[in-house]
Image (tube, rainbow, N blue to C red; front, side, top):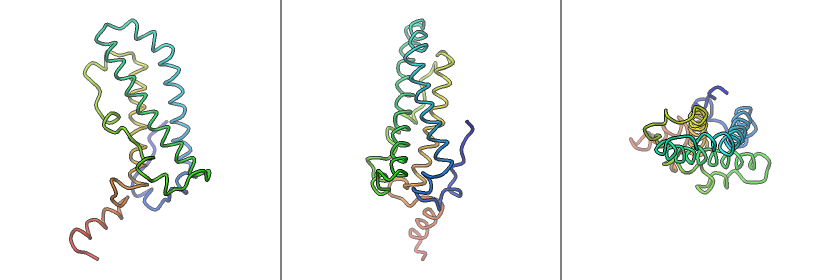
Length: 169
């Protein structure tokens, strides 16, 4: 799937309810769940066999990077499932916006891969790239919808912070 537009301009007036009912959310949800399934099939099947044939150093790197892709996807899937619960009325938007349900493990998921990733199997490299792209888009959605560390979300929020800092109305 192509990149989804998650710019502040397109999302700033969107509520959590309207977002979770949107085509953007549905495409992101479908992409995320499909990627989770595809990755699980690969890591439990062909990926396991490919890892056995790697040199020791590359096999260790494979183990670390497969954990990174799994962490990214579990965080993304959890976030998407919470948003779907809001849409279906199983959870309040206020509860979904609490830190407990925000996208987590950013230090692992945003971290750069170790040197030598290009020696890993092509399929794993592809999954790493796609999971990174999905995680970053969801992180952007999380920031826009819920704000970043308590700051107001979107362009209006940034303007409000500047006005407050410089004594504007």
